[in-house]
Image 1 (cartoon, rainbow, N blue to C red):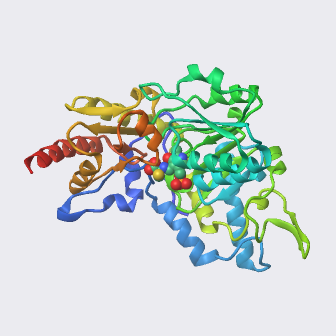
Image 2 (tube, rainbow, N blue to C red):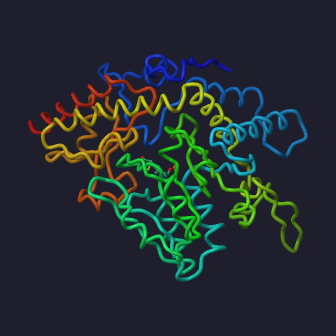
Image 3 (cartoon, helix red, strand yellow):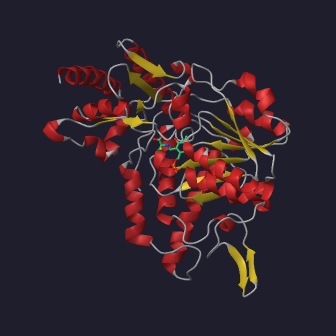
Length: 420
Ligand code: C6P
């Protein structure tokens, strides 16, 4: 295993120390233009240490898990279950059985909507979402409502991109069976007060699912302190591989849930008459699980832990502050959402004279990678009266110069667009 440069916890994060770990950041695009990667909310890049862990397993240990009685099967099972231990520790979950490996955040939400939702919701019950949810935290609940006759409601947003908590008392009621809310908006960057929403939901007897896709990679998450019932996230947004994610669920809730996917590994016994489901967490990991993905995620957690999440968070806050101020100085720019101190490292914006997708295409000419579109949050964009936006999002390897490049590229893109 390669070593990772660590620094004292309170020292400001210096991205130049970590950038050499990310081979792709050395990529030079056409005409010798260096890559400026600002699309981290979509997916992050991987350090050598994570790539090495993946290569290591394929070269030295690889087999299926939990099945074989041979050396490779034992080694791979040990690595896979070791990754589960890393995730448990990272989230401060009470027990390793509460960590279910999934294909990603979307798969985790669908699992809960199917397994918990189908078993617990009745016609007229309410599912409370918010208007800022990613489609992955909307569509599975709409599908659940269609199956069960439950009703979906949405907590509204303020004009400046926060949850409108004044609506909470009449939206969160005894009818609410589950509140599903993102911890950080993938468009506005807003950090939601999930620590207050969870006790409020529990007070009316509702369960809470936290969509941690944009929070777990950037902010310290303690599921016991939060008292979250469910929390989901994806490995690829935190330096890990694609195709792996995590569903955290409280043991007593997971134990009471019927399995969702059926297949190998999730059973105690199968007869010609039926089956007896297995124990946690295998009950929810039918079939061959994302073995290499999970092990890669474990390596990513090691990397993030050694850098320090609080330093990553402060670093991103500095970058966000700088970008916010610089964008606000450009004429005709509208930044979606709230002030920098209330948001993570995500800034979405629109220009009054250039379509977001056109802007992103032009930025790419200057080497700057941002996302443009509705970011899988169409209702949110509708709420703010724009069909799409451009989005810059940061991670630990982004530098202050990346923002200078972005601003310079926006100004050049605008000039180019108007020259045509
Ligand atoms: N958002 C973005 O560019 P998956 O695709 O399963 O790894 O993650 C889904 C998901 C769920 N919740 C939130 C808040 C998210 O941001 C995402 C993924 C990416 O914003 C891809 S659309």
